[in-house]
Length: 181
Ligand SMILES: [Zn+2]
Image 1 (tube, rainbow, N blue to C red):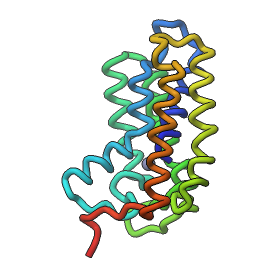
Image 2 (image 1 turned 60 degrees about the vertical axis):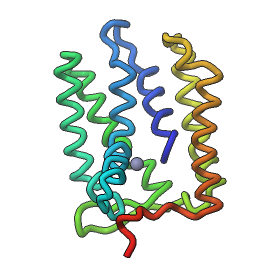
Image 3 (image 1 turned 135 degrees about the vertical axis):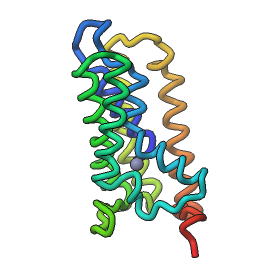
């Protein structure tokens, strides 16, 4: 899943019904929701092969990320509830990725996933409701700043998602150069 992860973070923020000051900062929820993908990006920049996401999306890798992000969020916000929410969102990154991609469960373990990325139109149809629902929930929650939940923000998210899906539909899924023989 690509931009759908942002929709999940938006939804989580909308469901946080604590006092306004106590609510988890959206930036933390966003960072947690996309943490494994940010690590993928770092590996790609460093030209480091990460086969089937084993160093970013396997259960132990996600658990380590969850602990790190949760701890950092706790020191920043001093809220155990926010820290738990952040840890949960990192782990919640994995299930939708099993629908859209293929991920190793642990080093040397099985690789699972339906891998609908190979059909860009289907991936778009799967991510669209997640993105729209999260955006709509956060908009209804009267989130400020309003630009985050503006029509333009939704259009931008859908544009990023569709450009990814069109690219993979046309070129086929991207194989990291560093993993090619
Ligand atoms: Zn991912």
